[in-house]
Image (cartoon, rainbow, N blue to C red; front, side, top):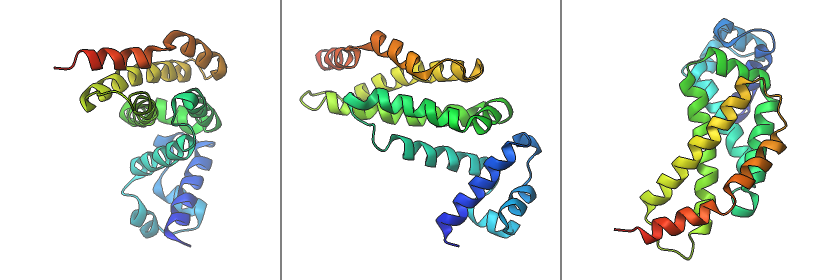
Length: 188
């Protein structure tokens, strides 16, 4: 088995185990037995279960956002995040309720920041805007977007993500460009 294939097998086994029990009840032995590898192989790829969780989150995020990094597609990108979370609901709910909050926050912050930053880069193509200003704007929106996602998870992931995105789009329509123009004008 190749290194990448083994990592995906470990991740798949872990996600299957999450259908049966919570993160705090899953052992490395459980994972290795489920995917037919030895403990040494697990430790070759991951230090512990939390590193596995981070790898799964990063891999899933990279995959889901690959196609949706422009101003015209940011809504699809954000919707793709919701769909990914819903598809992996046992994984997400387990992380949300049983892992240190930092894991779900870092994952969501990373994925939304990258999506927003790419949109800002595109919108600022013909402007002179400092990197720290673009980063500040991306951080601001990141916290709002992640707050919406966390509330959605907390309420059982019941609300239709399309409706959330439609309301969000109506709320922030034109605000990326407005924020960049303000940053451009307020350069010092």
